[in-house]
Structures are given as C-alpha cells and as structure tokens.
Image 1 (tube, helix red, strand yellow):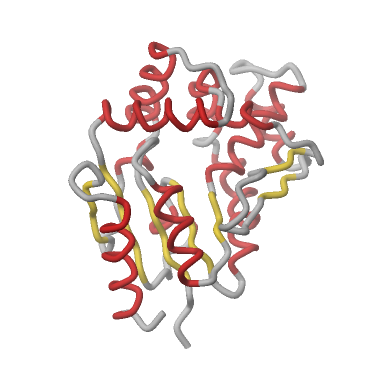
Image 2 (spheres, rainbow, N blue to C red):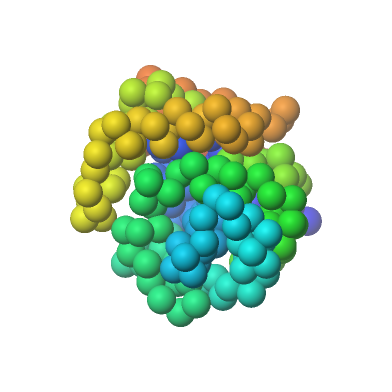
Length: 220
C-alpha cells in the first residue's frame, strides 16, 4: 500500500507553507509544519526566561511542553498552541532566530520532537520543513525541495509577518534568513530523491500542478 506522505523542504521563506497547504487541500491530507514544534519549544523557553546559556534546561523543557499543531490545511486561524496558549505572531518572531537554530540542533530535542512530528501522519500527510524528506518522513513517496534567492525569501517572510500583524525590521529579518542558512545544515540538504523546484522562476499555481502531477504518477 502506498504511504500517502508528501514532503516539501527548503530554507526559510522558500514557499514551503504556501505549496504545502495547497497540496494538502488538493490531496485531502493533514498539513504538518514540522518547524512549528521547534518554534513552540522556543516560545516556551522565552516564557520561562531561558536563553542561549540554558540549553540543558531548554532540552528538559522540550520534553514537558504540550504542543498542539493545527493540521487542517483550510484553517489558518491558528497554527500552534503551546501549553494550551496560541502565541500568535510570536511563534515566528525573527528575534528568536539564533536561539531557534541552536536548539533545533540539539540531539535530545530532535529525538523527542521527531515522534510528535510523525504522529499526525499515521494515515498520510503533507509535511513541510527543513528535513522532512531526509529525517522526519524518509519513506515519503513524493519529495520536493524548494529553493529561492535570499532576497526573495526575505521579502516573502516580511510579507508573511506583516499579514500576521508582527512588526518587521528589515535588518533583523535579513539576519534571520542568513543566520539560519549558515547555521542550520538541514536547510541545505535536499533528499537524494527529491525534485528541486526554483520558486523564483515558477508561480504558485504552476508549482502546485507540477507537484500534483508527481503525486498522480506516484499513485496518490
């Protein structure tokens, strides 16, 4: 039986969420933004007054924080709840990018969150993130990897933050993009069997059709 899992990976601002949601809707599958689990841990850490010097305590916190993500692709009213509270725009605050990059590399955090990321995909899913096709869902039948220039990705992230009502500082945002590119090797590692798409040369509708064509060919 074909495992109905599609992965969309790529660096920050490459268009993963937009494409992933569209695919999940078309395929009638849950939508899983795997990066939200790491962001939720960071929100919990900030609430607890923890910082980059408290990595052991953050790792311990990651094992106890309650994380609930919204897997309905047609509902963008909320993304995640951290200990029952919706953090709103705080979940994507670029000021926390350096801590996010550091914490996402901690083996103990990654091991714990992996099972949580996989749980909503028991009957299939569209998973988006940085290592969905290589680590989270290596058995996915269709794997996509999105790439785009840093300038384009910064512009997209700024537009996303503005839609969410968050303040946007161009320098902070640019630092987030460049810092996560250089500090998080997962963002640069496409699965060997992934189809690479340049989102700077293809429109959203075109990319959706390309992806759905691959899904049909794979029997989804």
